[in-house]
Structure formats: C-alpha cells, structure tokens
Length: 301
Ligand SMILES: N[C@@H](CCC(=O)N[C@@H](CS)C(=O)NCC(=O)O)C(=O)O
Image (cartoon, rainbow, N blue to C red; front, side):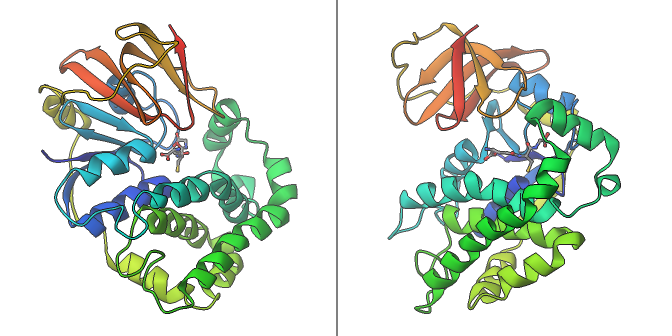
C-alpha cells in the first residue's frame, strides 16, 4: 500500500521522511499541508495532531518520525536500522531530533528577521509552542554552539573512513543528523553556520552521500484522494495497554512541549514502544492513529 506523506517543503522533519523514502527507494504519495494551523486534511484523520510530518498507510495513520520510521521499516527496501547499530539508531535519532533539533532551530532561525517568517507563522508558533522571537534571537549564539557539537561529533565518528555513522549503510540516526543540517542549510540567514557545520572534516562528503539518496518516487495527490485510501481495514494491533490505562478506554494523546489539543480515541495499545488509538472518520470509517511512546502524554478523555 502506498505510504502518503502529509508535509510542507520547508519542514526538516518532513525532509527526514522524504530522505527515508529515498534510502528505501519507495514510491509515495505527497499531500501538501500548510505550515500553520488549520490543517483539515491532516487533522480529520489524526483527530488533532497537526505536527509535520504525518504518514498514512491505508487506514493506519502515523504521527511523529518516532512512529513513522518503524512503519516504513516494514515496507520493502533497505533497513532504516541497519546493523551494527540496529536499534541504537533510535537513541541517536532521539538526541538529534530532541535537544539538538532545538539547538538547530536557534542556529537556523535565531538570525532570521521577523518579516522573513511572516506574521501568521510567528503567531502560530507563539500560541502552540510558546516561541519567543526576542529570546530566540538572544540565545542564538548559545544554541548555534550547541548545534556545532553535533557536527563535531559526527565528524569524529566519520574520521575512520566509514560512509555513515554505523558503517556502510545509512540509518535513522544519519537521517536525523542530516535533516538538522539540511534545515540550517535551507535558511539563507544561517549560511555561515551551515558552512561551518559542513566544513568539519568528512561532514560535507557524508552530507552529499545522504542527499544523494534523493526522495524516492513522489506522486502528488489531494487530501480527498488520500482520505479515500483510508477506507480500508487498519492493520491488526500488537503490544499491550499498560496500567494505569485500560484497553478500549477513551484517551487523549498530546505532545510534550506543545499546547495543541489532544487526539482522542479508543486506546488499543499503550506500552513502552507505541500508542495506538482508534477513531471513526467520516468518509473513511475506523482508522488507527499511531504515536511513539517517547514524548507523548496520555490522559483519559
Ligand atoms: N517529534 C516530532 C517533531 C515534529 C515537528 O516538530 N515538526 C515541526 C515542523 S518541522 C512542526 O510540527 N511544526 C509545527 C507545524 O508544522 O505545524 C517528530 O519527530 O515528527
């Protein structure tokens, strides 16, 4: 079944998934969504989750790269968790996509004038994430210094001549480190920082290898075309519902660090790996919405 990415071009987390499609040489559907609320094509499926990216595979809806990459892993193509690092790729990715992402936001956007961001974007990020432009500008040198640590450590890792952080094959950790630098590189105001990152020994060659995977085979589609493909049976759910939660209870899933409303549904899985809720969607029937456990807040609804 064709995976469908809900995304916008400038999103670094979406670039991570586009590059994962490239590594796996997959064909995928592309539904473009706005970079600010509202995002009706996306939220009618997720319930509320509006962050970018989201991936739909039939009636299974994957929110957050922590759930998306494991779902792509089940599709044909090279592994995103290749040996010898295997699951260690996840730990590296969660560092790169967590504290290091915020450092790269500072490195990329700290020097950006407010009018380059646009009023709608600033208001959206203030309301949802508490973004404070003046504070971001002040902490930009510190955050840039923090982001440079990732490039320096990446450079050290590649110093023995390996092609990717785990050896011959790229994995989720490479994708996460790559999408952070991609973000800084995409912002013209941060050109000097991007040059300093890529100027670390071995980093530019590694970056070129990552970029060389491309994005797989992208096919544009509308939100309504994607919704029609959700009118299918969701995959059977594995895992368990761990205490204090109970199977079938109405639960809301929200994300640490945002004020976005929770996605509400019947709880089918909530263990240390993953969360799955079932929702009824007009025009599609029952869908299963998947989240990673890391970074998600679950509460009865
Ligand atoms: N933990 C999430 C983070 C995703 C994230 O923060 N995405 C940014 C865009 S790159 C976002 O959602 N910004 C708000 C928006 O796009 O509405 C993941 O791994 O997918």
